[in-house]
Image (cartoon, rainbow, N blue to C red; front, top):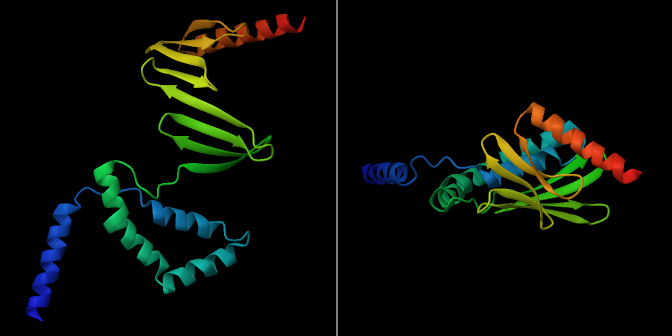
Length: 178
């Protein structure tokens, strides 16, 4: 009995050294909770599933897998293999799937399957949509943005700069409609 206790304490202590500061994102458990919250529209059904998963140790197993394996991978590599990088969003004009990737986002209209690609270029500190640069950070106080006539203009990164940009785009739209 004493030998088993000594081994258990040794494993626990070595685990604290190996996994220190490795709280991680708990991607697997988070996905499981998210799925449980959306099993059914009725909150009581979701609660029954939650209780069943607690009794059948589903949540306990996911926590152990996250805590010992997946969060350790996240600590050492910087990314959790179970972290969710795809979100479904219900907007005013439809439903969209937003997938994040290393350099930006891909947004897909679920009804039409049309996609738009937003890409960040770290070399010139800019954002592009489907290959066309629409915003470049000039410095802490200025950005270059695509104007209504297709040219890049530099505006102040402030409320006044935003108002000037809005009026420039509105004027270009008005002139284009005539």
